[in-house]
Amino acid sequence: MIPNAAALLVLGVLLAEPVSRALASARWPALDPTGALLLWQAVGLAGGLALLGAGVSFGLAPLGPSLPAAVGALAGHLRRWDWPPGLGPWQLLALAATAALAARLFGVLGLAVTRTLRARRRHRDLLDVLATPWPAMAGARVLAHPLPVAYCLPGLRSRLVVSEGTLAALSPAELAAVLAHERAHLRERHDLVVLPFVAWGATAPWVPGMARAQVAVAALVEMRADDVARARAGHLALAGALRRVGGAATLSGRATLTSFSAAVSGRLDRLDRRLGSLPLALRLLPRLAALALVAVPTAVLLAP
Amino acid sequence: MAGLGELERAVMDVLWAAPAPCTARDVQDALAQRELATTTVLTVLGRLERKGLVSRTRDSRAHRYQASGTREDHIATLMADALAGAPDRGAVLVRFLGGMPPEEQAALRDLLR
Image 1 (cartoon, helix red, strand yellow):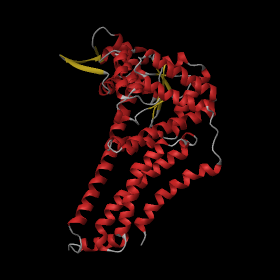
Image 2 (cartoon, chains in turn green, purple):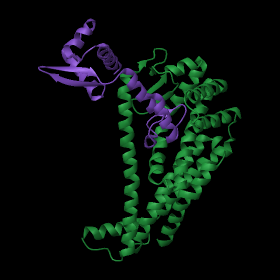
Image 3 (cartoon, rainbow over the protein chains, first blue to last red):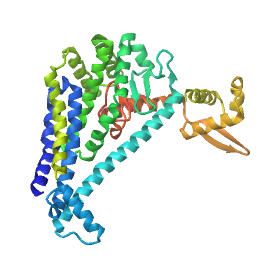
Image 4 (tube, rainbow over the protein chains, first blue to last red):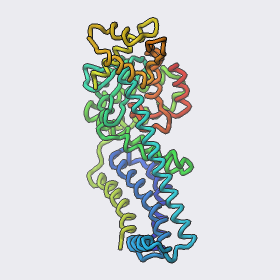
């Protein structure tokens, strides 16, 4: 099992750093945000599985020729209350490190989920009192404020919110584009897609790959929602909305809002290049890669 | 629960318009045309208190309720949440215009004050 553990360790480290870095700076994801998002999920899942699997495989290697056999042997020893032979300090160290890593990853994720849900509930509680329902659009609410914002509160009891500033600034077609964008976020649960990367990016900010993954996934989710909005409301309406709302926020704010508007201009550029969709064969590629990425460490771990 | 939200808005409007802290009875009278039961008014006031929109003081025998902040204050809080949001809350809201770096969030918070 030692070669397996070594291979998994290499795979995990490759995914956490060089692969994440390469995927974050690749240009093709702009053409196929959905495929890229699937690949990111697979990179995250396979990376975690490989790193944790490497530690467990190394730690349990003296107990059997494969992980299922070793786990069976360990269970047998523990049931008879005798110390499994071959478990020395190195093995215990590896198992302890793995347990610590797992506790950290899931602990951080759990904390992020709790915080997110609490912040969302608090926001929704206030929103339901302070924002007025918008009769023209079922499920949408209007917030009386001149700055243009449009956002949604994801979850089982989701809310779609626009400010009076947005209503004043946008034409009906542009407003439809903004709402289609937000509805895409809600329907496809982009909050859940982003959440693990936000959590893990915050845990290991010193691993550049993880920090960049967070930024890349957030940008891809916007691209995906833009694609849906463009299909629903048209290219011109969406570009107009981005220009007006993005520009208005910059104008009414200060010169310091530069990278905020830089993100907007990146999205405008992408729309203006009117990217067509990739041919089917190329769209299959990231999806198959995602599948393979998850399948390989799973197979290595479970092989008898 | 759209009905409850609507009732909460109506009660807040009464408290925002009132010159002094109100008893549940005052609120009930102000909304007389709705013919609310006293327990309903108390329930709504309790919910608003939990949400941090209303504070309660005890004055000899009656509880008095008052709005804890103007409507504009609370809307500014929501706007700050919506436009910036703390970094560890990246998935709380999903915005049309995406996130904003911390130094810009600070500038925006100043702007919303």
